[in-house]
Image (tube, rainbow over all chains, first blue to last red; front, top):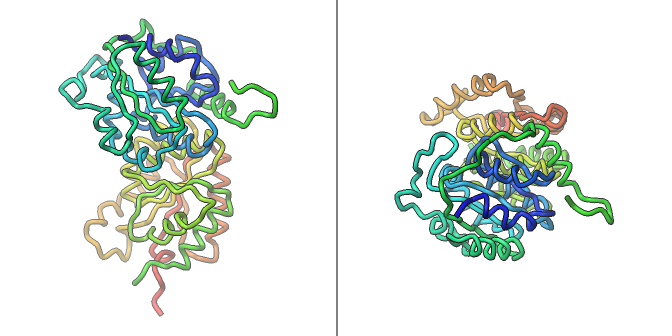
Length: 194
Length: 172
């Protein structure tokens, strides 16, 4: 299945959530579906998308937090899965798009191409609600359930090693950073969250 | 010589006084009391890390979500976190307060700490990170407050070195 189809399937669910996405195709494809102020694109520091998600989730327990990650990034911070499991914020959903490669730098295979099982690692790290999905409908159902549930979840979506035609985003990373911070501020009574 | 409980409390109270609500930490000997104080404080969120670099992500998330945070780590933890410091905290202009125990410096008896001790100040310098040394218990509160003020004003990391003079009980 294609990552962009998965993102499109859950796009509306992301309203009101704090969304942190790792760099590369994940960021570009989410952006291509329509940027919103509650989307933060972490254009470097691979591995730390899930740690950022944890920091946000602990800081705003009433806010749903969705991390959109990649296999390459998660492999750089496997220990972070044990930290997620240890504190298990119920408002955090960690979605990993596993295309078994580092796509945007030339398509080099990662260890998930030779059998490393990220959902299995997450489960063994202590994240009970961890699963692998391979179809878009299966993904949509699992992702929606995970976001709505008051339980830490790690959902690994096996996707094709394809990316967008263009990785260009008309959004400077600092513009995004300050806009996202403003979007996470508590809203005055009666205003809808972005 | 034991690690100073009294001075650890001074440091902890100074963090609380500047509004820190989230502390991420990877323990080492000198940080034992500080971490215990964070653990025992119902007002503080303590995140024990597997690896120090995670703390950069956690502090960045906390800051963007409106909470002040601080990191507690050994100087080798600083070295371990460098990519996170550069490509998240500095690139994205995140005020990051790092309390770093100054191992491997003058007075260090453990051989394995000494290479890191030589590297700490030059690395902080190379990264352009404003650094202050906490040595005198009388000025800890003021120094922590000034560090937090600068971090917020500059949207940048600031490092506080927890020195041997502060963290160990003085000779009688």
